[in-house]
Length: 242
Image 1 (tube, rainbow, N blue to C red):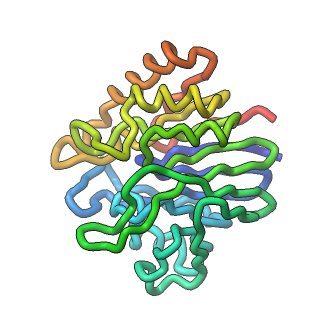
Image 2 (spheres, rainbow, N blue to C red):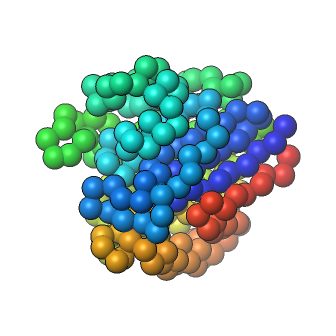
Image 3 (cartoon, rainbow, N blue to C red):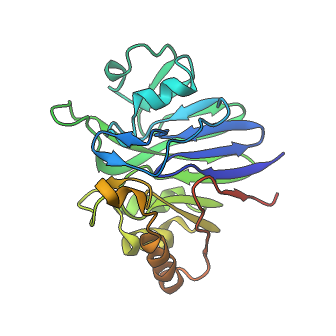
């Protein structure tokens, strides 16, 4: 069996694990609302499931999902179905739910983040996911630091947000220091920073600024030196030794 993690930018990650293909928060377009990136992204191979962490436009992008397929298996927070008209295979889940995706166990877990669809959306919780097969992968979505992360430990790989699309992040997000603190709870073997350097406002959206990821690596070396930090380029992959 093979295991590979491919970062496609922002919070979009393709995870190939034990023959299953899972994609997180696919946002593939050059422009999403007021946010820009260098270029649009070729959709990944058709996955067995798409996992959506929450309903913000930079995580739930309907045109991007449609490029993958309107009948793709969509796993979304409870209450999100109303925003997904035209998609045929939708599973609403909540923390504590466990799914099988191509033989991989997917545990739905908490996240601390306001996950509603702005500006007037109904309050809908944000989620994280832990994929468990021959290897384990934690996808945080967007979240603040919380003690309950320790319940997910240990994991082989933590896909951890370290920044955002503006000059700073607010409540419900991790900055480089907070993401490093999360490693002390999650106890991963490898951490891959996500949610950095992809989208921004105006010209800031095309710089590919590595500063947040590199700062996270320094903070992790201080707080969790036993964790290997792997900074991937957009489209870059991490092969997991079996």
